Length: 71
Image 1 (cartoon, one colour):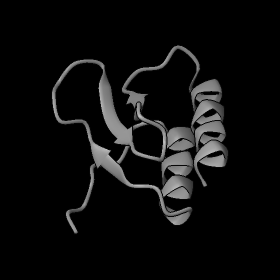
Image 2 (cartoon, helix red, strand yellow):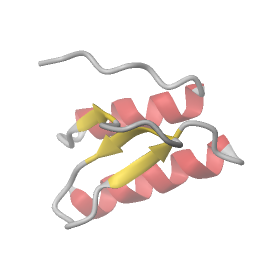
Image 3 (spheres, one colour):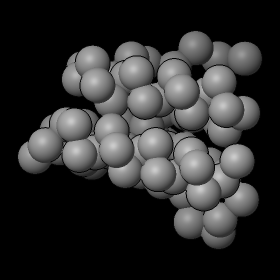
Image 4 (spheres, rainbow, N blue to C red):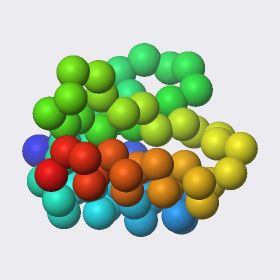
């Protein structure tokens, strides 16, 4: 398993670790752009994690909502 890069915002990094513990795959974003990570799940569209969200706390809540929907 390849180690992923850590997210610079601590709230989001914590949510990403929760996703990993829930069994979802968290990988580095394959392309550049504004997203740093991708969370895969059962839905056809993966969740993209932004590198510089306007509000890190709200983005972490969105990640946790994605975890609940996909576990």
